[in-house]
Length: 383
Ligand code: GLY
Image 1: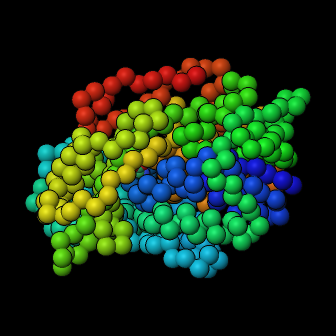
Image 2: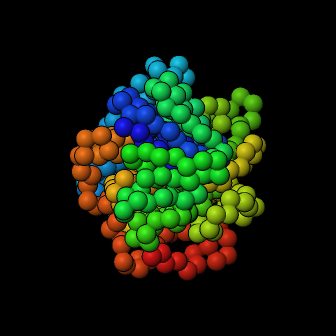
């Protein structure tokens, strides 16, 4: 079987790797460079609890399923690529500041334990006096998303896959209602199956009937990277609170991320920088002395209901998109369900059916961060 995947981010490469190991001949088309969409500029938190809470819902259950796959996925990636990917399951602190309303929490369990502010400060000495209390989520993990991307690309190629960078998928060709080819500026690729794993760009390939176009919208996120003064240690855990997260990565921290509907704009803004710094300093006041060393922007792919789009769209065409805030976490589970669907025809959870919006106008509900005036503006409608 030959499969063409559009998008060399974490989803496309993870699916490609799994399919190639399963015996398929796989080509990945990438409009830019490997990981250049959201993957390389993501925080890399595997944050099932912090992102999706502890109750049961299709995406939260999928997140837990993915989180359970991560230790083996990470070990296989490292063993086969020879690269360390910085996978660490050492938990996250979910902080509540003084004067803040309590988070709506389900019952605490082994997945989450309550901490006093002092106990949280013992775990993370940089935390300031404004902490009211905390929850510790021990199963939260993190990965260096840049190292992950490199390792995935190596594993995919070692398994026989081919990456064609700077080759944009422009238009699908259909024969009798089935997708049989994808046209790029260089050639037309023919295959038995095609997968759209193009993140925020998933809706931009021409030639499909309207109901088969994945209804994703880009949600911009800016992240800053701070370096400590000499002799200051970085935190040990991922920390969430005050509208941001702080992620230790090697000798620096990432602070993210804004949420903004700004089309395909990935400009770096002063307002985001100022807001991210201020919110992070509200958690860890001494971060004011840390040097800004990088500033990134990326685009998350969001479906109108915030759930992933996973499954068959039309004959011959599959979709792996709409991962929204959880693209890195979901990756091994996305690779599993898509490869089983394509190779073995095993159905995916209907809650993720990419055709579930067909014929409806669905409002995209995205909370936006108040980092600039108008930041909580109108919510667009996608069809
Ligand atoms: N998962 C974090 C973010 O999307 O900002």
